[in-house]
Length: 105
Length: 238
Image 1 (tube, rainbow over the protein chains, first blue to last red):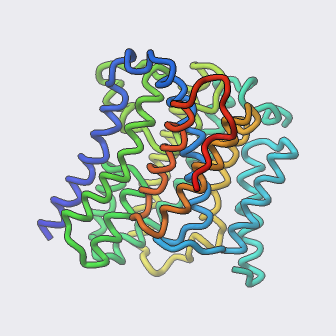
Image 2 (spheres, chains in turn green, yellow):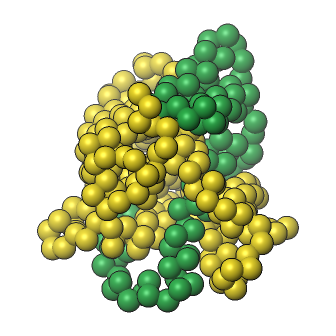
């Protein structure tokens, strides 16, 4: 019990530390051209990685969940149609929920 | 509602904040899943809530709960959770100039850094909209995530699964929406995105959840280190 509380608080502290460290690093670090390019491209790599991992990852396994994949497809279709952000989200969740209600995935 | 058409260039701070709130509300609802999973793993309701209040990093929280459920060592569980949270350091690095927060504001701004608040902020065209998006996402996500954690922890096993509402696709759909305008910028961006996705998927079977996303950042590093100007479609990850 006490051990679990220590783990909970250590996790909280350990998750906060890098956030503050990132904000506190002197701006000079980003002065070099390659560092600037890196900082600019990091969100692209992370967003693509997050999207892929959350769509195809199930714990440490890779799995195709047809309903989830269709939801992402609906989001992509909405984005191609230049739909507003909220519509993109609703299209994705609605498609996935609808297919699951029909017994898919 | 044509205002969402050209995302990056035309968001006013108010629109950016509203987008952030929508995302926070939708993603925060998955706190239900965390609360339920945490209590199912053997954490108390209070411990689940303290994690959401103080750690406030979804992937890390799930990782710790999973380690406790698996009966693994607590030290390994904490180490895994903290490793996953390290990507927020990259986010902070990227956000520092945009947010320009000092003193007490920096202490709070650091806590507000998540995948979602960072992605929303970086998708905006100007610093004012970026700050508004960051604040809006944080306020709505923090509130929703913590209330949902409490509800999930109290109702563990009794509420319907969030997946039946399609909430598990909200995160990926939002990330794709934020990635979309960057994919139009050029071959380098598309190459980095493709490589990032391939790296994350390739690493998934071998790493604890969350770490594959950290590794995906190496795609950005490789592209950044290539000679400027003559960059091909990112690097070939194979």
